[in-house]
Length: 290
Image 1: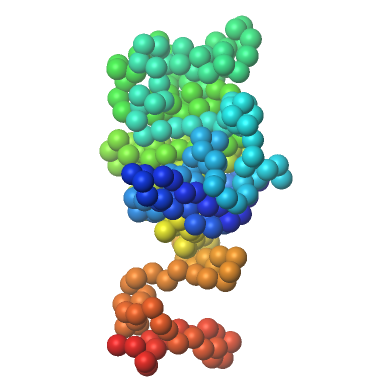
Image 2 (image 1 turned 180 degrees about the vertical axis):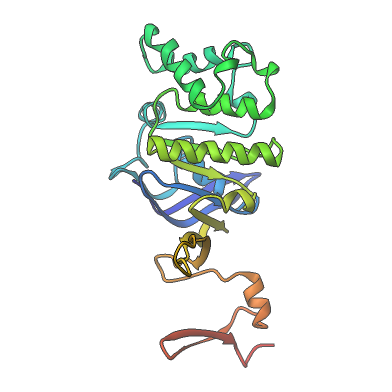
């Protein structure tokens, strides 16, 4: 569904060029629920902004369902956001109008998408019920807890019936119990609506609750964790789920190695010895470097 090919994004900051994305490649299937993690400045928010049509790449190609979006005009990008995307932000002020009730916040999005007035109330009530907030339809954001505000924000994000839901640190301002409930809601929506869900988070505990985790480092995808099931050991025993981690090679067959791997191998220079041994690629410290 979503294809990012060799994405590059360069910003100008204080007279200097900052490379946020450096040839990033990523493929996301329709109906997938995945997490994107990375340190501050790794490029994860820049990637989310490009997928969300809030920014454009300096170079590379971004396609949705086979259609290239990299060269769309501002008007076309606005139409793309309105018809295809739903957004949930960490800051409730970006999600909700403080002077509107929960129901009116949802209906406001429908107005922008030319949904008939008589349909707005019915759909708003259905969405509130879907996120478990039907009893709070007439409340203002200030009357709601942080978790309740995020549930309403998710309903607002669904108002235009999007194909993709983008969430930037959606649990960053709530406690761990509420964060777990919000992630459970995302999973429910993903499964029942076949909604593609992309979550940017720094919380590995939350990231591990999804089936696919993509780690971004220095503007590239460095590793991926994919959820797998173990086979039952015997009759009547349940299978268990676990994440298996993979390094990701870019188009030039380069990969990033974790610092803890390099430390464990005693590699502290930019030169290594690479050999093929028994069908395995073996990387060891170069004998010519300290």
